[in-house]
Length: 115
Length: 113
Image (cartoon, rainbow over all chains, first blue to last red; front, side):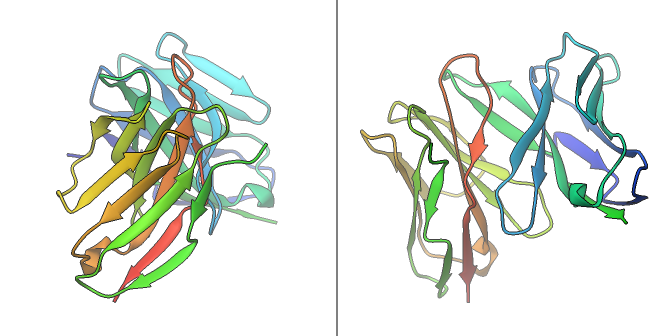
């Protein structure tokens, strides 16, 4: 059962434009929502993350918007650059029986920023 | 500081064989998790280990097993390989407690032929 749904599957934007990627989750026990960026041949790297008690978090050109009632969150990339071209994954964590956490990932969005 | 290191980087195996993948976490990190990333999909959780104990298991068959050593490095073992096991296997390490940031290695690309 897919617990985190991500859209769109692919996205093409012009340099300087805004890239928007959306995710929806089902499990209300999730308590941490990170976004990862992955370049070809590399492992995912944490980009930005948010907790459900916050509606928005901004770090540089990257902003997460979080809607707890709708169980949705989104990533906005302002002033998109060709170097932002990568695959982006949303994720959510569930408190496990241990002290560390397990990530449930969305299916990914391949972003292409045209020069 | 060195990041998460995984070995080997690439591996080709034949159906029915066994494979062992290795992971060294970031120094000071005591938790290691394993993920399988099939081409075009998001990573799927396989195992989590903390302080050498299994703390979580994803929806994978018993052919998959793992362990964590006293130095916190970890091995992922897959028996009776199937073509569908072809994927990028990712290891992630994290500190204990409320810090939930997971740092991923570059992965091991496993191809089963």
